[in-house]
Length: 277
Length: 272
Image 1: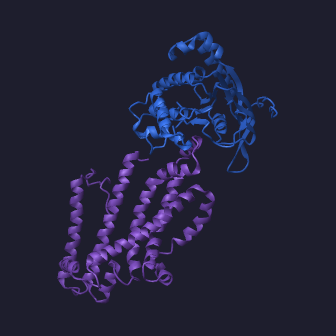
Image 2: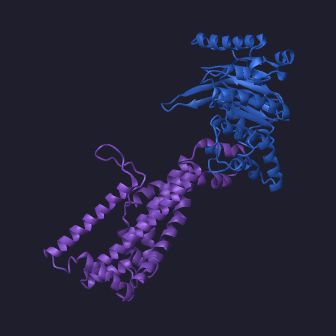
Image 3: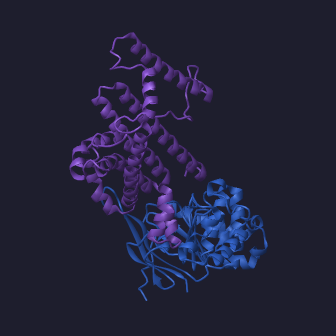
């Protein structure tokens, strides 16, 4: 059991001059077990805050976040996080970085070595095991960060714009690899991005968010498109050229744009919070 | 303090100087210093017992090396001083660094200790001499306290700054991977603070070593400061200057060693 449930989640940040800023307004969202959900939205829509609350690095002002039926009280290895800026420990080698969570958990050495070797291989890091992060390119560093998350066999994976700091070519390669990895090791995934293409290509469902205040505009199921179009068998550039894909992209863009122009209008109607079960 | 070799020296034409030129200028500086010293000493403006010539000081150094002065030969005074310094410095490092790290990690401790600390660090190490003598006597304890006071503040400050400068996301990443507070301390905060700590060690060693003479004013026995005080008592200026040279050379050597360690760490972690 590892579904992630946001129940009437509101987050206000106090402002230095007094008062507060409503970053997230009464969000209800359920991410099913082993579902890959991408959250897209403009900067400041609260998408990163949403992910941080699932990670236990931030907490709702109102409402609850449940992972596997339990309220999130703090960070933990069953909810692995991949950060935009990689957040690798600069003083540890690739091997030590990937093995850090296992070491914290006290995994026996031989077992840990085997698990590390598996993800080094899977993420194409062979030959770089003893390098330090600063000796690697951005793409390679993010592979290490993804391996470090996956090696924990987490119930949920939380990714905060993991490819945001990468150049366009590296990004495409990483997107394909992430799809490959996600098919092999299905997990409950929250993937934060502001790239609409990336969200459609990777996710089972795309959650479109708007800002001021941060809220969900629409949730779109991508699975029918993927299955009907046979995306899994196609390379990424061909998937992105299919009519289904381009239609979906413009649909999401229109949603994002409409909400931007609508401001400042009447606040969007938000569903009433679901009472706790 | 030594000049940094990698500093960008700008010559008159705006070009930076090579290593050879750097050492040539360093040598020129020293040569000029000794030439002026020797010139003034030879001119007879000051009596030789107040300003001995460089050659006379050198003779004194050689003599002190073989003949005991104030009870010991020069090398014994030197090792007594270095041993005393190392003990006081180790004490400052051993208490100051953990305290600084904890202050960087626990906000409450920071708020309790920082104001107290800010007030205390303006009391110069030398001002502790009477108190140190009253509390711990003139044996080992008194001098140690003074060296400790001199070296303590930079240890605390550098560890504190280092821990505060460790990026939040590294701590968060470790937390999400299941690291305990202790594991975060040993695997994230300490290594992250290390460049700052090593820079602080260099400053604290310098200040600790400088406090040494103050501490040895109250020592009866051996040490460079003691040697100098005895030289002063005997109106023997060459002995005083010979002691000063020892202090300068050892201080410089400590700085060179710690600078090399600092450079090695920076290289390994890519300026982390």
